[in-house]
Length: 177
Image (cartoon, rainbow, N blue to C red; front, side):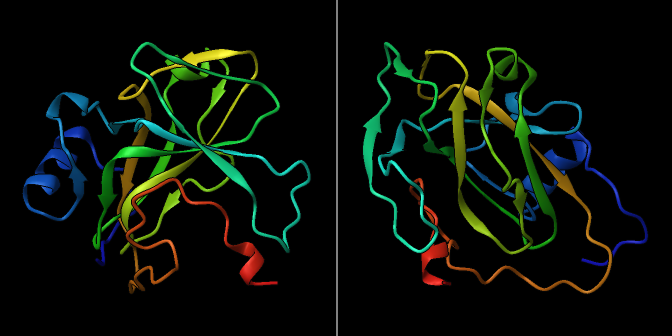
Protein backbone atom coordinates (compact mmCIF):
# COMPACT_ATOMS: atom_id res chain seq x y z
CA UNK A 1 0.00 0.00 0.00
CA UNK A 2 1.32 3.44 -0.83
CA UNK A 3 0.35 6.18 1.59
CA UNK A 4 1.21 9.85 1.66
CA UNK A 5 2.02 9.74 5.35
CA UNK A 6 3.37 7.24 7.79
CA UNK A 7 1.35 6.55 10.91
CA UNK A 8 -0.12 4.16 13.44
CA UNK A 9 -3.71 3.04 12.93
CA UNK A 10 -6.20 4.04 15.60
CA UNK A 11 -8.42 1.43 17.21
CA UNK A 12 -11.30 2.59 15.02
CA UNK A 13 -9.16 2.14 11.88
CA UNK A 14 -7.99 -1.31 13.03
CA UNK A 15 -11.63 -2.37 13.41
CA UNK A 16 -12.47 -0.98 9.97
CA UNK A 17 -9.54 -2.78 8.30
CA UNK A 18 -10.37 -6.09 10.02
CA UNK A 19 -13.96 -5.79 8.73
CA UNK A 20 -12.65 -4.89 5.25
CA UNK A 21 -10.30 -7.91 5.27
CA UNK A 22 -7.13 -5.82 5.09
CA UNK A 23 -5.96 -6.99 8.54
CA UNK A 24 -6.29 -10.60 9.66
CA UNK A 25 -6.78 -11.25 13.38
CA UNK A 26 -8.40 -14.64 14.00
CA UNK A 27 -10.07 -15.24 16.30
CA UNK A 28 -10.98 -11.57 16.60
CA UNK A 29 -12.55 -9.95 19.66
CA UNK A 30 -13.60 -6.32 19.26
CA UNK A 31 -13.24 -5.90 23.05
CA UNK A 32 -9.46 -6.31 22.64
CA UNK A 33 -9.13 -3.11 20.59
CA UNK A 34 -7.62 -0.18 22.47
CA UNK A 35 -7.13 3.40 21.32
CA UNK A 36 -4.31 2.50 18.90
CA UNK A 37 -3.59 -1.22 19.18
CA UNK A 38 -5.07 -4.69 19.54
CA UNK A 39 -4.43 -6.77 22.67
CA UNK A 40 -3.41 -10.29 21.65
CA UNK A 41 -3.66 -13.38 23.83
CA UNK A 42 -1.13 -16.03 24.80
CA UNK A 43 -1.93 -19.50 23.43
CA UNK A 44 -1.71 -22.57 25.65
CA UNK A 45 1.55 -24.01 24.28
CA UNK A 46 5.13 -23.00 25.08
CA UNK A 47 8.44 -24.55 24.30
CA UNK A 48 11.36 -24.32 26.72
CA UNK A 49 14.80 -24.30 25.18
CA UNK A 50 16.78 -27.11 26.82
CA UNK A 51 20.15 -26.46 25.19
CA UNK A 52 22.59 -25.42 27.93
CA UNK A 53 24.68 -23.48 25.41
CA UNK A 54 23.02 -21.76 22.49
CA UNK A 55 25.18 -22.28 19.40
CA UNK A 56 23.96 -20.49 16.30
CA UNK A 57 25.24 -23.37 14.13
CA UNK A 58 23.07 -25.98 15.85
CA UNK A 59 19.36 -26.62 16.12
CA UNK A 60 18.18 -26.07 19.70
CA UNK A 61 16.75 -28.89 21.78
CA UNK A 62 13.50 -28.12 23.54
CA UNK A 63 10.52 -29.48 25.41
CA UNK A 64 6.86 -28.61 24.95
CA UNK A 65 4.86 -27.19 27.84
CA UNK A 66 1.06 -27.01 27.83
CA UNK A 67 -0.17 -24.13 29.98
CA UNK A 68 -2.69 -25.24 32.56
CA UNK A 69 -5.88 -23.30 33.31
CA UNK A 70 -4.88 -23.33 37.00
CA UNK A 71 -1.55 -21.73 36.05
CA UNK A 72 1.94 -22.82 35.00
CA UNK A 73 5.15 -21.58 36.64
CA UNK A 74 7.85 -20.05 34.46
CA UNK A 75 11.35 -19.73 35.92
CA UNK A 76 14.09 -17.10 35.59
CA UNK A 77 17.13 -17.92 33.45
CA UNK A 78 14.99 -20.07 31.17
CA UNK A 79 14.14 -19.29 27.56
CA UNK A 80 10.57 -19.91 26.49
CA UNK A 81 8.92 -19.54 23.12
CA UNK A 82 5.18 -19.02 23.04
CA UNK A 83 2.73 -17.95 20.42
CA UNK A 84 -0.21 -15.65 20.01
CA UNK A 85 -3.58 -17.34 20.20
CA UNK A 86 -4.55 -15.29 17.17
CA UNK A 87 -3.38 -15.75 13.60
CA UNK A 88 -2.24 -12.31 12.52
CA UNK A 89 -1.21 -10.67 9.27
CA UNK A 90 -1.78 -8.10 6.56
CA UNK A 91 -0.82 -7.40 2.97
CA UNK A 92 -1.55 -3.72 3.57
CA UNK A 93 0.16 -2.88 6.87
CA UNK A 94 3.22 -3.67 8.96
CA UNK A 95 2.53 -4.86 12.49
CA UNK A 96 4.58 -4.14 15.60
CA UNK A 97 4.17 -6.24 18.72
CA UNK A 98 5.01 -5.04 22.18
CA UNK A 99 4.14 -5.88 25.75
CA UNK A 100 1.25 -4.66 27.83
CA UNK A 101 2.25 -2.46 30.76
CA UNK A 102 0.36 -4.77 33.15
CA UNK A 103 2.49 -7.72 31.99
CA UNK A 104 5.69 -5.65 32.07
CA UNK A 105 4.97 -4.61 35.66
CA UNK A 106 5.16 -8.31 36.54
CA UNK A 107 8.64 -8.30 34.91
CA UNK A 108 7.64 -10.57 32.07
CA UNK A 109 9.30 -9.98 28.70
CA UNK A 110 7.18 -11.18 25.79
CA UNK A 111 9.58 -10.49 22.93
CA UNK A 112 13.35 -10.03 22.79
CA UNK A 113 14.08 -8.41 19.44
CA UNK A 114 11.74 -9.68 16.75
CA UNK A 115 8.77 -7.37 17.08
CA UNK A 116 8.12 -6.60 13.40
CA UNK A 117 5.35 -8.41 11.55
CA UNK A 118 6.36 -7.84 7.97
CA UNK A 119 3.85 -6.90 5.32
CA UNK A 120 2.55 -10.13 3.77
CA UNK A 121 3.24 -12.35 6.81
CA UNK A 122 0.33 -14.45 8.05
CA UNK A 123 0.41 -16.82 11.02
CA UNK A 124 0.69 -17.08 14.77
CA UNK A 125 3.43 -14.84 16.14
CA UNK A 126 6.22 -16.55 18.07
CA UNK A 127 6.93 -14.77 21.35
CA UNK A 128 10.32 -14.89 23.13
CA UNK A 129 9.36 -15.03 26.81
CA UNK A 130 11.48 -14.59 29.94
CA UNK A 131 10.64 -13.80 33.56
CA UNK A 132 12.68 -12.16 36.34
CA UNK A 133 11.13 -14.17 39.20
CA UNK A 134 9.21 -17.45 39.27
CA UNK A 135 5.93 -16.39 37.68
CA UNK A 136 2.62 -18.17 37.21
CA UNK A 137 1.04 -17.56 33.81
CA UNK A 138 -2.21 -18.73 32.24
CA UNK A 139 -3.45 -19.61 28.75
CA UNK A 140 -5.64 -17.08 26.91
CA UNK A 141 -4.12 -14.25 28.97
CA UNK A 142 -4.15 -10.82 27.29
CA UNK A 143 -0.38 -10.81 26.88
CA UNK A 144 0.68 -7.98 24.59
CA UNK A 145 -0.31 -5.46 21.97
CA UNK A 146 0.00 -5.18 18.23
CA UNK A 147 0.05 -1.85 16.45
CA UNK A 148 -0.47 -1.48 12.71
CA UNK A 149 1.56 1.01 10.66
CA UNK A 150 0.98 2.34 7.17
CA UNK A 151 3.60 1.59 4.55
CA UNK A 152 5.17 4.32 2.41
CA UNK A 153 6.60 3.24 -0.92
CA UNK A 154 6.48 0.10 -3.02
CA UNK A 155 5.74 -3.01 -0.97
CA UNK A 156 7.70 -6.26 -1.03
CA UNK A 157 5.78 -8.97 0.78
CA UNK A 158 7.28 -11.34 3.33
CA UNK A 159 8.37 -14.64 1.78
CA UNK A 160 10.38 -16.07 4.67
CA UNK A 161 10.49 -19.52 6.18
CA UNK A 162 8.22 -18.65 9.11
CA UNK A 163 5.23 -17.87 6.85
CA UNK A 164 2.02 -19.57 8.05
CA UNK A 165 3.63 -20.80 11.27
CA UNK A 166 1.05 -22.09 13.71
CA UNK A 167 3.30 -23.25 16.56
CA UNK A 168 6.00 -21.59 18.66
CA UNK A 169 8.91 -21.86 16.25
CA UNK A 170 12.57 -22.22 17.22
CA UNK A 171 15.23 -20.24 15.40
CA UNK A 172 16.28 -21.59 12.02
CA UNK A 173 19.46 -19.50 11.91
CA UNK A 174 21.52 -22.71 11.98
CA UNK A 175 20.38 -23.29 8.38
CA UNK A 176 22.04 -20.02 7.32
CA UNK A 177 25.50 -20.71 8.75
